[in-house]
Image (cartoon, rainbow, N blue to C red; front, side, top):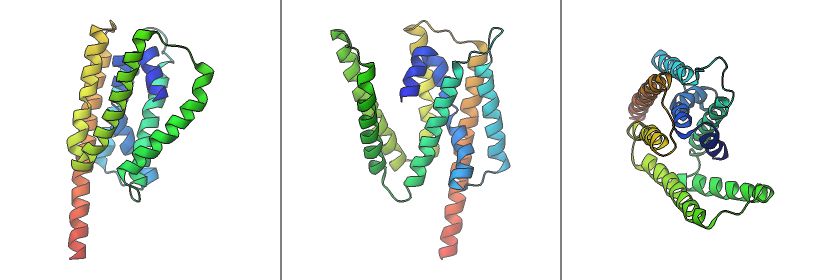
Length: 216
């Protein structure tokens, strides 16, 4: 969350969200060494296409590459690893257990670090900060509940709406611009991500069916 907020401030809302949309592709990539999942050629192809889309988004428009974009890439990898770790511990713990411990440990850690960077907010900002806190907590909980009652293949495509919302807000409120490379790269990344999640869903159903037949 610290890296994501820093990206929004330094890189911009729309471009950061475009890079974050590669998370499902990175999840499929990290699932092999960490979870021991097998990835077929179709998902390998989707991973390669998605990473190409990310490179289009990162493509410098001037003569030099903007090193600040690597911050968003690092944040994307961090979130992908978080999702993989959540999947791993879900074999023994419930989603609410993970939600509790991530919140408590994150709260304690930032409480210890926060005083060194403390600055008083203006009176008008307290209301906005309260809104940020409420939407952060509720959205995190709703996402966990969505994965509880729906298949990942049904939930993940809807999360790409955040890219649309971020682009609209970034342009309307913060005056951000969308380059051609960013638009094309985002479309490629989203398409590859949706295919990756759908393929994972298909493989999961086949595995579950095979195990059911084996039990019978």
